[in-house]
Length: 409
Image (cartoon, rainbow, N blue to C red):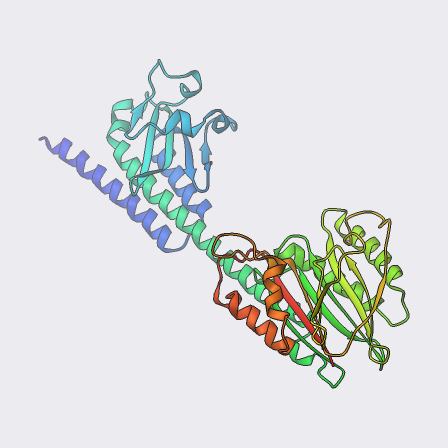
């Protein structure tokens, strides 16, 4: 081997090592994806005299990561799955290839863990100054360099995604804390010689669309409601917060329930534009007359159990849900007399939609066994939660779950 050939070979090795070192330093210095790609592009086009470079990278789907020198829409002409995925080795684009591939000279697959993660397409090699043969010497180097760059950009993406997810998690934790402040704590519900209340709230995600409330209207009347926004997650939670603000502002001892439902329907329609609705059971209990006045707006019918006569009654719907229609055509208010020694159980559909061992929804009949007894309603709710494994991560739970129970003494 001549001294000239040895010298050239040594210079080539030095060039490749220097290039790899520069790229590695950039990665270790936490350069952005844009800066890394700029260094990579500069190396290929200026140092190796490659005229055009196009990179497809696989994230959730194939996307164009770099288009340098080609027509801006060149990447749109290529379907990676059908045009490139069969290439497992470096390939030269021959004259018999489809017309859309003829603008490229070389296809370099980038494979990581036995999986295609990218394709580098090279075109417009400067044959006059460099010639094709010298470029061929660099192809495996380009493949190695591309692998390093692609893996580095993917790590950058995953790191950014991790940071984004951590930020979302923190925001959700704050949102969950704020939402919990909108829902009365069970320990603050009334417990006296006339009425005792207990409740349970369990969002499917960090925040949810279920809502219950208990409001002292005056010395003789308590108001309460159980509501469920269609859907789950953040959007349902936002609608629920809006609904809570409206209900709290409107629900007084003086307002007629029919009027209250009408206004709530108007405001929810204004907020959701008909894309979401709310089912709700709302009631008012008079301590002196023992009368319960209620409207069930498309909600799951609460169970009223007379412990003396052992009679179970369902308080069924008497109008459609809030936001289902622009105007609710018919609203019927009901008033019933509550006997002493009775229990009332209200809940959202997440409770009755829990699946049993046969993958069948539990339904309301399964709930009856928890309330058809003389045990305190608080104990009934605790037994439901335990029996259904709600706090133990039951995999058959697919929705928010809220339960509110009352004992009338």
